[in-house]
Length: 451
Image (tube, rainbow, N blue to C red; front, side):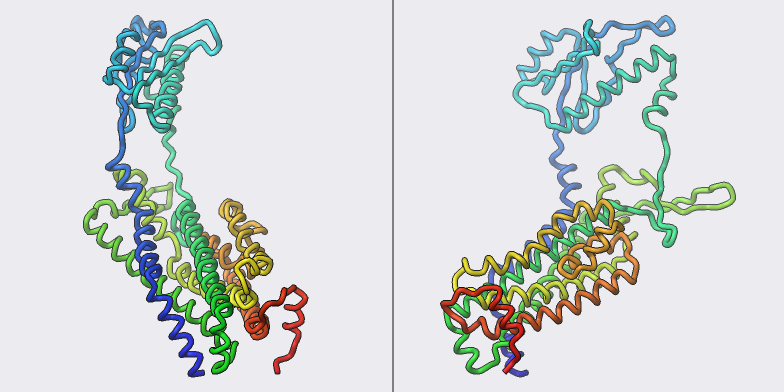
């Protein structure tokens, strides 16, 4: 047993002392922090506004003895688009070429169907997609409002209510009283699932390369003369698992430190929306107050409120469980494959059956996020080769305890079987050179009793 600890120590120190370990450890928390705060910073500091000149050449109409324009004076400027108005399209186009405007929007009436045509001109600075969409949508909305006012004699207040019915919608879990925040649960589940996928491939690949390098360099022949071959395999698997846990722990600490520093620098952005008491006949419902915060603070606020609606300790605990079990399952199999490799090209036929379930799980991620309670999602979260990824997608939404228990139990049994099979293959394959190994050889080694 002492030799096993020596192997674990050697493998662990060799991995954590590499530059790639420190680079990845620093980049991970930075990227996770940027995912939360970057949208807010970009919106505050990189938003470009476009100057648009509107020429309304649609014939005027008369309402209650007043001559009314269909489009002139109706556009609303915002942080993306600033509207102004002109009368002569030729002069406006000349000003556009000279850089006074970013776009000239001419609206005319024709004898075609539909009769209203809009022509947008640009010169040096082509407006972005968001600005174009804003201009198009406002033009359609203004025309619709004008038709309602002219043809149906509706007031501005009635039109505003038709266009934007004020209905506050609260989607609440009746068991906890928390709001849904399905988008946040989807994002969190996707991040955790992809992290599991990354760790399995990255650290499993490390085990396979380490084993194959020792075999091709024949260092393993020296090692097995003083320690059992199975200890070598288990030592690598455990050491790399400890490396993964070390990196994960550092990611959590550094991410919390970065978020804490950003919160100190921008305290208002992290304010959560207050609760409001809504009276419903004879009962009172508590809910988050909609639109209580400034628009530029809402993205981070939604993240914070979404995290409050999720059972974070359960999610964190299950992530750790599936991280370890998923890694042990695939780490043992990758280690067995490494013992079969003489050259890099030799491992493809054996690694493909192992990687296919992981790739299939990633392909199924959109379907699972669309309906986390579907039969497909339930089965994939129980099948051990896909459960580490799929179950992490579902847990933020809330999964019955019996499903988690069955999934973990099946995964543990599969890990035990995979370690047993991998040890059998490793024991024979690590000292076998120059032979074309086939699947029937692997089955023969697995059936062979230990000597």
